[in-house]
Length: 480
Image (cartoon, rainbow, N blue to C red; front, side, top):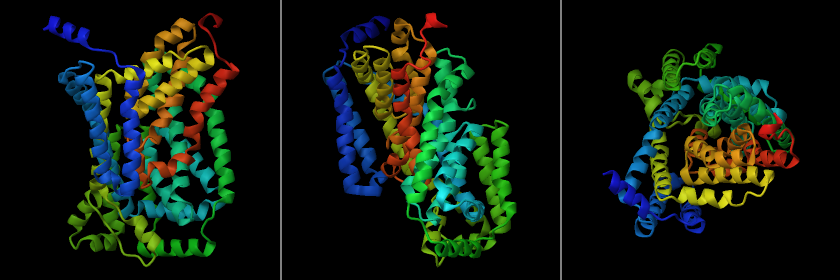
């Protein structure tokens, strides 16, 4: 057996950089055509077929030209899909939580009080800052966006902001915390995989992260004054419609408060999301009986439907009717299907050796400090596109450049920081990445709509390269 495996490994060919990029080029081209043809309906199956088609191309190249056996592709696909199993469960629970929080009146209550507190002029900057604070405390961009993010999305729509820029502000803040919080899995992974002490890694990241979020906040602050928003008359009509449709009471704020307590006590995400949804259902049965009876004459069936199914509540205000309609867990099935197909694509790219071909292309471009950081950042972004899972991308980027950084004499914390600056924050900008698909589904905004407004996410990789070019606090091992 061992001799056979060694023989197969020996027969495998290493793909060139151009050959490795062919599936990526085809993927982008097909997705552009798919989105242009199907629009927002592309998630219902067309995008999934695109990913499987490109996966087939990887297998064709691998088996037909590179001598890679099918067993290698099958093993890589199974490994990739199993690696996101827990994320798929979390995604289902996020769908259930979104439906439960909306119908129970939790999100409408947050929107109602938020519209009275947050001025439209500073709404975008406030949204980014609030999400940044929450994500630092929780360590999770997903939880932040699925809870407070949904409420802020509703406030932004009610105040007349475009969905894209509101989602951009939410995501910018949420991924700030995901990047620097000691509770964040990506922060722990990036530092631990390279043997960098956690808080040393976080302190070093502040050099690039603080300027990036500062610039983003300034841009959102400026944008708030130039965006066309709803008139005060429209805002009053919306809050009036909200109060007439739901029983608005401060008691409903106990649900997000208790959710925050569970997060602070580091209760696992699956348990937190489940208990938070259950709390919302109980509060919905107490405070929103009329809304539940509108969904179904049986309160038991209505309570179940608000978690798993599509719900719609009547309102004379069209914007409110659209806002409070939910799809629950069932609304996540298209995204889950897409994630599984994306993992198949990532597995085929890895098994075919094309991930290594892309990385070699950028490693060969290393000529000095700036090009080293730029090559690392570019590779991380390309891996986000190719593999579609940020955790795998963080590990691969670190492993690919570990020896190069050591050979050049730079500290590992420079590599761990660059990896986070490039991989963690850009994963949400790729439509077929697990993060991009999840946040797009949760917020109800396409990736391409919010991408131009994710200022923090777009600035971070550029800031990493800029700091390297300046040479600010870039140490070689002998310097410390």
